[in-house]
Image (cartoon, rainbow, N blue to C red; front, side, top):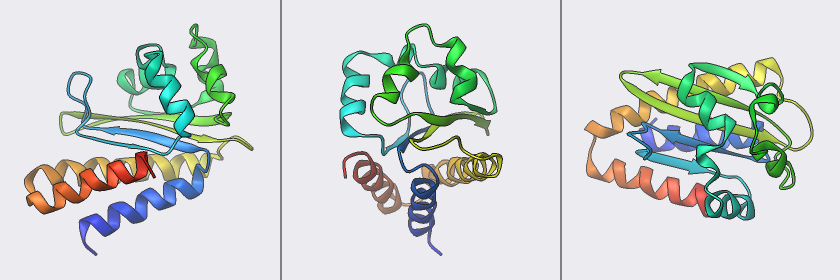
Amino acid sequence: MNTTAEIRRILTTMQDIAPAGFAIAFHIQFTTPAFLFQTYPKEWINLYNKRGMVMQDPIVGFGFENNGTIRWSELAANDPAEVLSEASKYGLVYGMACGIEDGGSRSVAGFARSDRELTDAEIDQLQGLVQDLHTMTAEAKSVSPEVREDLRRMSISFTHP
């Protein structure tokens, strides 16, 4: 299977597990990711960006400071700006944060559901898929310009369906 098709398959699986949406920033340098995939509601993304919530977001904070996962319910006590509370108004009620550092590069992800907590098995599966994408997109730096353009287009299509 080619890299582009496999990445698309993984992203679709993630959407199935986290139907309220997700945001994944791969290979962050300073504050800019090489690739960004978002499926959260557009209204939430707009508000989040308008208010500059990224620097106050406990999901982002966890992802930058840790390797591993945590449920959003466990982050609520460390959310003085009430980012998670505000997100719940857009159907992002339950979720998990994931941070990965591998190969000298960091990726951060958040996944959401509106109906229930993610199970331990779902969290493990999502963490494995983020790790797979982290590795695959790191390799994309050395592949053809066509594959990099495919990744850029996928990032746009997932973020702005």
